[in-house]
Image 1 (tube, helix red, strand yellow):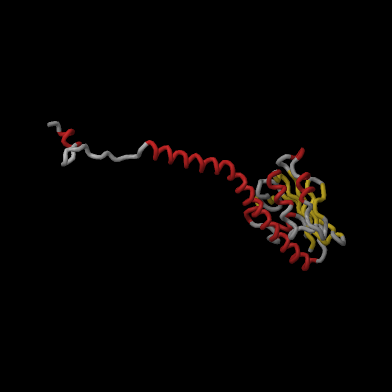
Image 2: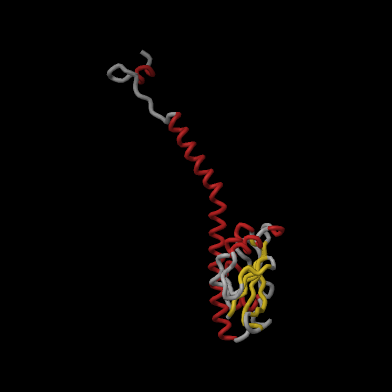
Length: 194
């Protein structure tokens, strides 16, 4: 007899059982993979946006704590002690947000936009800092604009005030201020009192 035929026949004379993956199991695995891919496509951008917003809120919370601490030491903010370079030197921002070399360093937000600083006023001139962030995408702008009540005294998005001192951000105003003609290049000015 042929040796291959002998190998295929078991001791009791029946054909040996073949092993491997069936077409049904393969189709099931492909379907599960497709569903996971679809979920990643649908929910992935939302997850990354939410993570970036949380990181930005955390960095701005630290910024607020630094404003309060620094403000108590210097009194009023001036063009000298409130310049972006001076704030970088006082470690107002995480090192991961700062790039370049002094005196031309820049601070970037989670979306690659830049920050600028200015002297602000809540009650008296120089009693606050205004931190303006550019390049905030519309998808993050709405969530960020309504997440900074504990950080900012005043918030303006694309020139429209969405939060005044002593009140919460108005979600409707935030929603209409984000996006529009600015699309994914929104500007957000956050005024933080000392």
